[in-house]
Length: 200
Ligand SMILES: Nc1nc2c(ncn2[C@@H]2O[C@H](COP(=O)(O)OP(=O)(O)OP(=O)(O)O)[C@@H](O)[C@H]2O)c(=O)[nH]1
Ligand SMILES: [Mg+2]
Image (cartoon, rainbow, N blue to C red; front, side):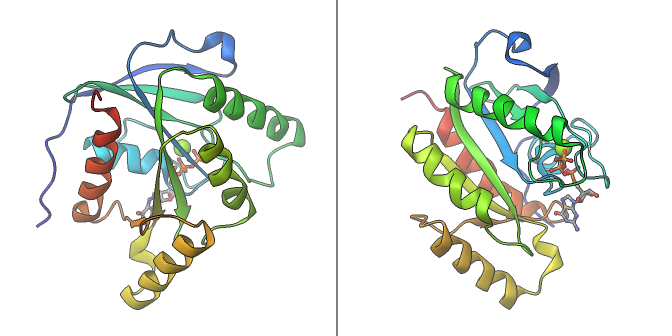
C-alpha cells in the first residue's frame, strides 16, 4: 500500500467572494489553481487525508468562492482552494467576476508562498496555463505543477504528457502526475508544497 505522509489536522477557515472578505493575512498560503473540474478540491482532501473537507463535484464550476483551510503541519499554513476557470457553461457575468477575484488574490496576497497549478493529464496545458505560468513567474510566485487524474491514462501515455507539459510550459523539472486514487502519487506533491512554506 501507499506510504502516506502524516495527516495534518485541517479545518475550514472561511470563504470569500470578493477581496473585502479575505481573512487578514496571517500564515503562509499555498493556493491551488486550475481549470474547473480539474480536481483541485479532491487533491486538497487527498493532501490532508480528509475526505469531504473541500467540496468536490461532478458538476464543473462548483467552487465559486475562494476557500481557506488551516493545515496544522509543521510549520502551519493555509491551503487555498481557488475557483476553477474556463468553464464555458456558467453565465458570462459570473465568469467575468472570477478573473479579477483570482488575479487580485494572486497579485496582492502578501502571505502567498506558492501556487499549485493543476492540469488534467488528458487535456494537457492549454492557453490559460500557457498565459498563467509566465504571469506567476513575473511576480516571482513559486509554482508547483501537477497533472491530475493520472489513473485515466496508461503509463506510457502519462509519461508522454508529463514531457509535453514540461516542454510547453518551459518548466525546469517534470510536473508531478497525481491521482487521488493512489496515495503514492500524492506524497511527492506534499513534500514539494511543504518546502515552500518552510521559513527561509
Ligand atoms: N479518476 C479520477 N477522478 C478524479 C480525480 N480527482 C478528481 N476526480 C473527479 O473529478 C471531478 C471534479 O473534482 P473536483 O475536486 O470537484 O474538481 P475541482 O477542480 O475542485 O472543480 P471546481 O471546484 O468545479 O473548479 C469529481 O468527480 C472527482 O471525483 C482523480 O485523481 N482521478
Ligand atoms: Mg472545487
